[in-house]
Image (cartoon, rainbow, N blue to C red; front, side):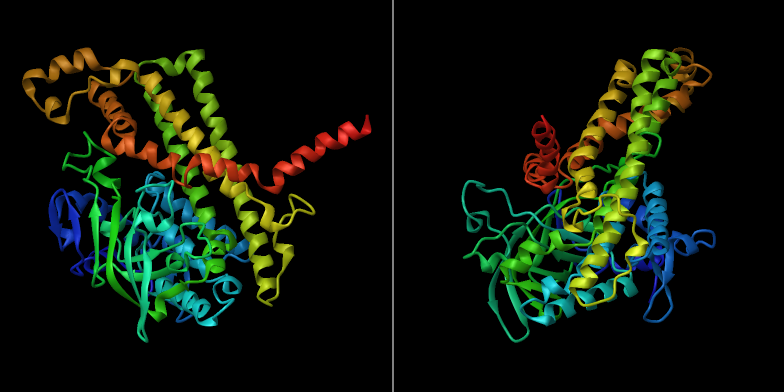
Amino acid sequence: MGARTGAQYIAGLRDGRRIHVNGELVRDVTQYRGFRGVIDELARHYDRHHHPELRGKLTFASPKDGLPVSNSFLLANSRKLMEDRILGERLRSQYTCGLMGRLPDFMNGWVTDMALIPHILGSKDKKFAANATAYYEHCRDDDVCMTHTLVDPQIDRSKGVETQQGVNIVKETSAGIIVSGARMLSTLAPVSEELLVGPFMPRKPGEEAYAVAFAIPMAAEGLRFIARETYDHGRNNFDRPLSSRFDEGDAIAILDNVLVPWETVFVAGDIRAYNGMVAAFPGHVTLQAVIRGTEKLRFMTGLACKAATVSGRNLMPRYQEILGELVGYVEIAEGMIVAAANETLHRIMATAEKNQQPADYSQVLDAALGVPPSQRYAGTAAMRSFFPYVNTKVCDVIRRITSSGFVMTPTEADFDNAEISGALETVLRGPGMNAREKVRIQKLAWDAIATEFGGRQQHYEIFFAGDPYLMRAFQYSTEERRRCEALVDRLLAEG
């Protein structure tokens, strides 16, 4: 098939899935008003791959049949291929302002990584590694829109996995495994086509039934979703410029004796493979997250700067210093893209060697001589520490710069009302801009940080890479902390 059009994507959503939202059972998501905005946005996303000026930047020729497919599936094992991948992912993130954490690029990177770790998935049974490769090729060549679900329900974290009602293997059959249980947080689930149930680490000996990873269609028998309420309430683009386009949705996946064919099972009862799966990823998915985070930071920094212009604060040294700090963070984030790309190249080479394949280390830049690729975590540190911090920071800056002014913003309908439009123009105009232009910027800022959509964006970024406390504790346990201490020990020894 190759890269699909927006119309083909929309047609693929009409599969009879079961989505419960706002008290309704929705079987055709294309007809539900709350999903219409994000479906249209994703349709534009797919259409861009066919645009004459973008096709060469967003696609590459499939090794299978030469048809153009999204370069978010590119196995980037050279500098040139890595540059091509970064360009495509950057453009797609820019078109969505980095506001869609589960743009299809994310899971495309996930299955690309999954196909590169046969030494983990196939350590006990090679069929699971073969399944991962075949699934990657299916997603690449059929241009599947995927999401995943990773987290066990939060029933009582002080108790074992069985208390959380997580997804588990009920029994095995000749046709596949039968699974039941629940998972959250399935971002993009209402408007995706396939679901990948991945690892929620770690599992312990005795929890083999819960060590399972697989993929199923959204319309699989026994699968249903309970979605959160939608934030797209049908407001126009002037009043809700972000909510009306980028509300990707989140949902709880409920599985009731779902049959998963053996062909799409990647882990089944193997604790080592389950716990080691994501840790062994070369890093395509991490790189995509860093690129997306950078483009969102760029957008939010630009929004903060624009918000300062509506009141003339952009000309005041105090605010220039605050905004300059944000611009500096964007520059740091650009460096993190380079670091994440280099880490991915290193890991691809190291993974290839583990799977008895040739590796060309001339393609990488050795930024940390003597440090094994498995001990480099710049990309994951960016997701776990840097982006949560700077996203919180930029939202706070926007609040302080806009102050009380952006609370009192009229709607587009008010500007279209001849009885009051003149008064609005008199009292709401800004430096060198009319009232409508000023309020449009304020409305954008409000939607970015203060609406349901904006609030969810902030919360989502904090927990994007998992529980921030656990993630930082993980960083403390890495070799990098010991290398930091070693410098102190050396100085003390010299004295």
